[in-house]
Image (tube, rainbow, N blue to C red; front, side, top):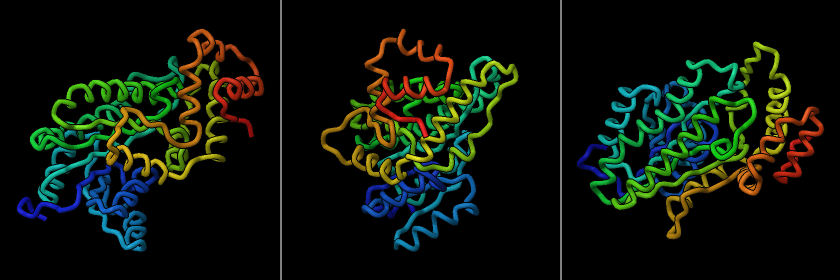
Length: 297
């Protein structure tokens, strides 16, 4: 489709559409009448997405781009705009995990995760905002995490990036509200995704943070056993786009709302005291008491 053939359906761009939340959201939006453009780093590796779309009688257009590269984002969004004519909704989903205690995480590791989870989302926002401002409408959905609202033990780079994206999203919402552009922050708890299999590196060079890593793995194991289907995140995203009563933040998936509410109800001092608990069993019990989320197996 060229610029002279503007899509009659609302155009949604979903970054990181090849798997997990991105794939489920792209398919869900296509199923509900959106013209969906899914971004992937390699079209050659998008076979599962395209096969599932074909099986369900859906059309997903692909755009090859890497959100870690400003030039790749520029070219990718130029390609989408050339084909679609406009972008009505941006779903910033693409991202990476990042494990490690603060002491054992290198500056390079922080920068690498930030470049994708924060700067990558910002690059995409900057690519779509001029058109949205000009039309006086549009939605930007930034997918963060409950780890953007409370510190996830032994995941310092990921926590830093997601907290940063939460802050940027709040500022963005203020900046663009007057232009008729809506910003929504979606904060998943534990969701069925390939990120768990990819996010297994646990630096522990000093040997001092074994208990923290053990607690992180306990959360991962409990999450894997209880993870929410990714399509539920897609449903929340569609609601955030379509609702006439929008909110800034939406929690979804296993443990999401409970952990955010539990942290808000705790004093900072009580939160810090969780770090003094010595045994894993005692930690699991205290976590359950504080958040109403059973991470025991």
